[in-house]
Length: 178
Image (cartoon, rainbow, N blue to C red; front, side, top):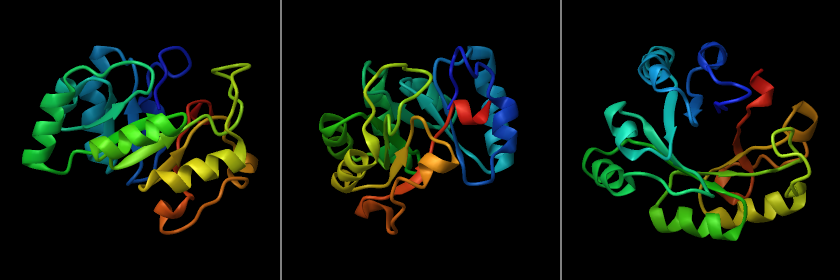
């Protein structure tokens, strides 16, 4: 995941990702959008744009819906997705309301956070492994863990296949990519 302060230019981090990974652009500089889209295609990566439906369409990218702010041009993205298929839709969730939103919209995956305390949100309450797993079980779709993840904390979260049975189907990072 890009971050305007800690990872403003995610290109170097994206180059290190294995094929099949995804890059989620949050508040990225407009000058980075097309180069990152090209880099993602060349590297076999999925690209998601946070909150900007028309930008996602123009880049042939997926859309990520943040939990705490509205998305722009969601309806055009959903219509384009229905017509053309293949565009990934992810939804951020911090609790049951986010999971319900993901189900209503037919999201492909949920990014459930924060699993553990994070540097980016000091003092904010974390879900912890038990609550994270309980929410992941309710998602009904693949769940990606985010927040305070490192090799040790990742082992504290279940990784169950198929992933819709409450385990993590992937891990997202900002600080871990620095």
